[in-house]
Length: 180
Image (cartoon, rainbow, N blue to C red; front, side, top):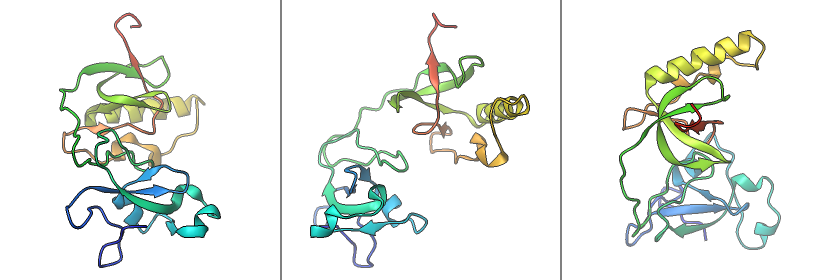
C-alpha cells in the first residue's frame, strides 16, 4: 500500500504514531516524501499486479514503509537522509580535509562521511565552492571538459550547517597526508 495524506500527497509520517515513512520504488530503492511530492518528478504509482509492469522503475512507487531503525537510509533521488523512528546517527564533528576532483588540484573541505558510487562525500564552504567553479571554468577553457554556468557548485543551496553538500553526485576523493 502507498501511504497518502488526506490531501492526496505522499505521506512523510505514519498516522497514528508519527513514524517516519519512505516510499519504495519499483527498482527497490527508497524515495523520500519530498521527492515523491515534487511536481517536477515524473512519479507513477503501481500497486498489485501493476508492480510487475512499470515504465521507469526509478520513478514508480510500489509501497510505503516506516523507517524503524535504519539510521543510514538515504533517498535514492536527492541523497537526503530519511529519518528513522528509533535509530538516529551519532553526531560527530566534521573533520577538515583536502580533496580533489582530478587528483591535480586540492581543495579544502569537510568529510561528510560515507561514499557515493565509490567517491567520498564532502562538504565545502561557499568560498571554496566559488574556487571550484573557477577551477572548472579554467579546465573547460583548456578543453578539459564541457562546463557552463548551470554547473556551478555555488548554485547548490547552503545547508543549515553553513556548508554546501557535494554528497551523492560529484567525483571527489579525499587526499590523505601521505598523498599530498
